[in-house]
Length: 339
Image (cartoon, rainbow, N blue to C red; front, side):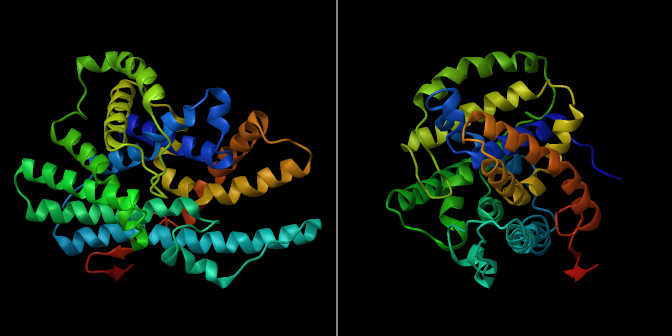
């Protein structure tokens, strides 16, 4: 039997992925609406994804079972979307040639770059999956070796300081491990909220929107540019205090929301959108500019609408015909057996 979905969690995931898609269409889009708005959104956009993942952290049945599940849910989709992107790049090359447009270069090295480089142009958002995998592994080790709550919190703080210093001094670790050290506190915050029973409904939930409105302006004015991918970090306290406040306020405000089927659907399958949206929006944006549209709010909104519209059938195709590659079903069964 399928587990019951938590509507407001799916809504939060939907909000995250939609903000990410908008940002990847045009990095300056939110600043068109208000100066520094992008900085404020960066404060919680990706941290909230780590937070949601932390809510669902489990030890499962030991290290082997835990690792198998994380490989199924994170690394298998990572590899699949790298291969999927490469196939789509080949298709784009054929389409460009048919239209008489300038061809693009496609190299086999693109299959290796996500494992060796920090930036790869065609599947950039997938860095998050590598980082999330390491965060899970690190926290699993902490749960096994450290029993007191204060020990877990102190260790989390210490690890985050190490990650912060690596970022400040531009010291990069392979496979996004340095980013994982920085992101660990967001994950632990989600785990902590579940631990104290914050997921349960409460009569206080109805005033969550008030809390969100109260913190929105301070977060807007205090936030600095942050990029976890490239370890461009603000002051240490801004890196954690502002995201914590924003995430908790959003969490509180979203709890009483009713289930909105379309948005919850996008949130539920946000992993698929994460892995595929650059492959959709890039050719759409290219074609619209080729037709004479200028970069700006209108172009961004149109590309966003068309991208999300096309994501709907793509989600259906991948969850129906590639469920084991998109974390809808396990790729490896118990005992690491292929089904």
